[in-house]
Amino acid sequence: MPAAARPAPRLPGDVFIWYVILLEGATFCVLFGAFAFTRVRHLELFNAAQQQLDLSAGAINTALLLTASWCVARAVLAVRGGTRGTALGWLAAGMAGGAGFVGLKLKEYGDKFDQGIGLGQDNLFFDFYFILTGFHLLHVLAGLLALGLVGVGLMRQRRDALNGHALETAAAFWHLVDLLWLVLFPSSTSCGDCDETEAA
Image (cartoon, rainbow, N blue to C red; front, side, top):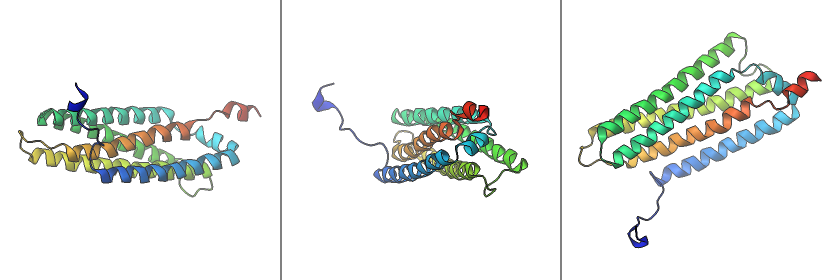
């Protein structure tokens, strides 16, 4: 395509959502930094506590979020192609992945509470664990709400005049949720010095 005919590059969705994304990203960076700083000062405690996490559940949650994001991206492409039914199907699949993440995360919390592990139990690792994952879970719920509202809006639009702006906006936020988890999951479960700690 000639350069003159190419559409000008643009950020998908509403510009406001990108300010939200930057703000939320900066907030999580501060939290991740505090987690890393505290871990260095309490390495043995963090390594021991990390052994109590269910890595398989975290891996399944990662797969659920990645799949959900892929489905949401397919929904955006479907709207751009003018196929509302396909877009709604992909959107529903993405929301199902997100709902699966919520259900599994709540089960993890329940298992921890049954073991007597909770927030404010004089364990800095689990304080960070519940704060970071809980804050992320709130973002997942907000993302699901946004996707649901967008889906309702799509159903009300005329088939021959689909507008994907709202869906692109919600999708941008949803991809932030996905990205945050990709940083959060390995940082909260990595235990590179566990062998050395256990041998000491």
